[in-house]
Image 1: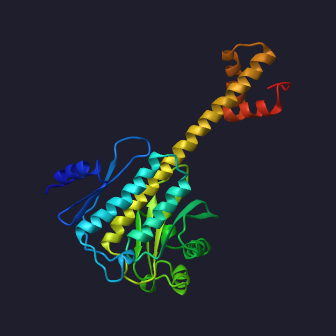
Image 2: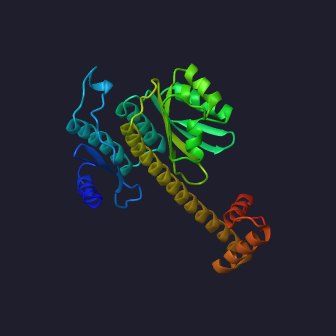
Image 3: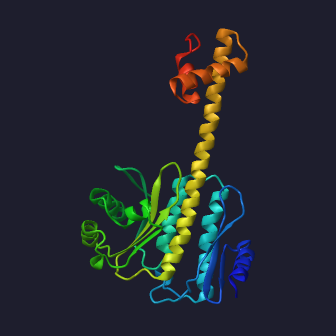
Length: 293
């Protein structure tokens, strides 16, 4: 099958199941876009090699068809949630819980957000261990989650005992029982940097399939952040419009001018003070109707 044929097959399958498996390979996952546009396709060239799942019984092994059905059900549940009003925290919690359930070897997971040198925030952690190791990376200014958040698409370490990239963090993580880590950069807006982080207790636990599935979940989380930013921007724009309208009304009433002249005055005040027009308007509203601009 050619790549084009594979993508066409994926696109057809995506309309029904979100997951397309053909010839024992996970070809793509269709992610519902939060802005209502067409689903995006995440391709993969990694074969599915019947991983083990703890939730199906010790020693149980899924064939490709069963594994594809599990993937379809879980990812369909994840991607259907944004169709309804959902808090970002709930989406992240669902994604990290799914990582623990779906990806073999993942003991715990979280999302690390960084908005400044000392502003580290662990979100949707499935255990305290993930939060503690995020804190260790903040203290030492090093670690796979930090590297993924600030500049690398994917960071994989299958044995912290043999990896020299983060000596201080590795010592802390090994002492806590973590030997393998897999982190994915999240492409977020408004200066927020972040990573989806998967923690394993066993060396060499993360396979190509784990990286593929983790990347799918990271795409889901990144889309959620983008949608959340758009919503916040929209609400901010509406609020600014209302504030400017109130300030214009106060200026029109006090100085007996029309709306055009009132807005011109707000614009001149903004330019003269080098302050955003919405902030100038907010100050006028806060001072009350008897104050002069």
